[in-house]
Length: 269
Image (cartoon, rainbow, N blue to C red; front, side, top):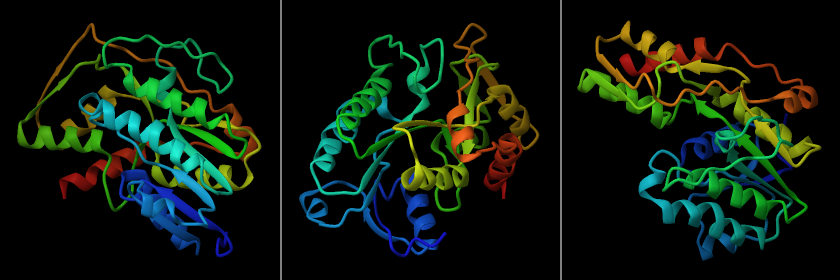
């Protein structure tokens, strides 16, 4: 696909997903505005084209609540008041954490407890704001890994601790699982949704979970360490519904655990 006639603006261009997205679009000859942080200068650009809104606070959000809401809500509103062809807001499948179901049309249940729910509340607030405008789409991403220029912070932190401290403390149950998806599949499908998506909201995930135990068992083969975990901790077994993206774009998830093992191997060379 040649994107030489398309203009893109990537918000959060120095972040994990944003940086990979910029490289991906440029390889396809796309014209890309790179904006790491929104400022009056960045907003002065007249031709924003298709905006990929990948800005946000993720890994350390509990310590940066103001930054979290500023990025997801205040800065987003600034962009929605500008001229653009389409805005794609990258949300999260974490919003389904307390819900019984996980499809795009299901009601979302929220439990507010201290700052634990700040991330989900921020993303849902942004989604609600986006849906007040016609030329916007929402992509709820699961846990993304892979890429050559920057690593996933969660997985990187695990590897760093077991290599330096020879131990890792896990708050959740070791049998709790997360949905993971590889970065190249994410970029391909963000582009497809931006150009051809018929719906307003999409889940972009694998549809299956990889447990903490699978990851730590693999890592233990690389380096011996002590795993401290809470046997009564949170145990997620919910699967993300990806029927919409599978039917509309013929998306077929790959063997992401195998791909993750290859990705984690990079940290041991």
